[in-house]
Image (cartoon, rainbow over all chains, first blue to last red; front, side):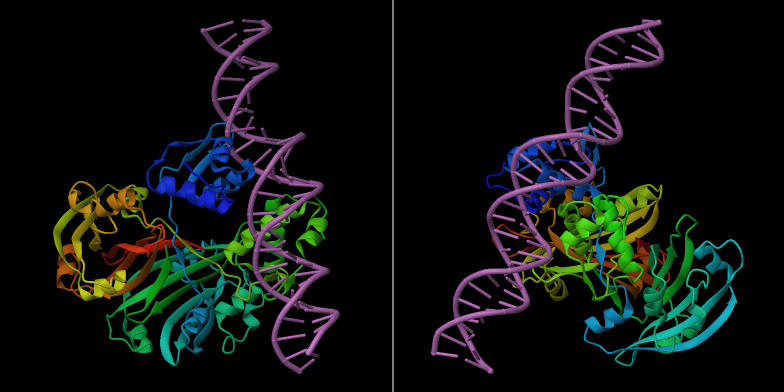
Length: 237
Length: 237
DNA sequence: GAAATTAATATGTCCGCACATATTCACCGC
DNA sequence: GCGGTGAATATGTGCGGACATATTAATTTC
């Protein structure tokens, strides 16, 4: 039971607490909005808002007539902090820099075509960039960009602005995927990152698409960033 | 300009569109709620709701008196998928299992004390567990649990239920951190995970706390999971 | 008894209003 | 000028009511 009159944020917190502590276990039916509103001493609107947020987060499932129930797997979605390299570096008080090591327009390798879900073998812009923090290697990036998904990309000068930032500005994506793993440094990456060959590198891959008006989603870019040994990504739970 | 009367979801989408397409560039001031409400043909409440969601996502920044402006770096927070091993395994259609390799009550090592921000050298429950997917090594976990933060933990039988799930059920956390990196397999981990010594392992560390009523937050647990080579974490952008 | 219709119900959406709260800005006295 | 004071203002929160919509349950009809 609750004593005070709750705000909608407090109501959400209280509901979440009851789910987390097992008072309302997964699959259980939650009291109706009106009943909760009465218990919490607030209007139905506030309970509705709280429950809608929880539903959006995947904690509960709601159906008209049939009420609200706790999701089978109440999800906790950790939020990864800033995946944009420049911000990552500057947030730590470092000076960001980048070097364009290679630039080429070439047919997409098979692996990349798969990542971007490209049916035909289109020509892609391929870039290799070294990102620096305070002059030290921070990430070695291999990137493929679809000129169809990012108009104007062939004219851009990526020695001045990083591909990451250019794309963010000129070809914003609608959705994408990210994948994180550990890889052994092969010779080239080891040399560039000043790591020992075979050293464990953190690998971060990103693929992004743009959703057309009524067409099929168009791939924009695929990028793989390799971080030197010791690098860690942080997230909040 | 907009023709139809918009719902709050449509309003949010329209505002997001204007930001993404650069009509309202980063740093720009957004019209006031009332003006937008008039343009969208809806009440201020709906515009308020739309803008609040965008503010919660970090797309815009709002201040009382001073209005709403587009964030300098309209943030995209990738959502990591299910970090709970059992669900991770079962979602891929695998059979989950786990083996308790070691259990001991011992004073906290210095490194762990630092992670949990423990001032005194309290005794912690230390566990080493091998998580399995279809019988194959999936993750090798080293975990320290504070009996103070997780009452009853000393009586739990972790051969039957994994520490992860026991904690989720009996000592839910309020907040925590997560850190992801790549490490070379030392001898013990390599043997247990059936990997070559020195092979690149994905390391996932989690620390969780519970927020007391009015007291200081109490640490619950710190866990480090090492995944065999090739393992990748997925996230949506 | 099966199928179609109707009623009941819980959530979804929205409005108009009111008041709280934080911040800015103009004004005032010195 | 300079610091303090108070009004103006945009957002934050909340209520109560209304109607829409989807789904289930009950009822009627064949």
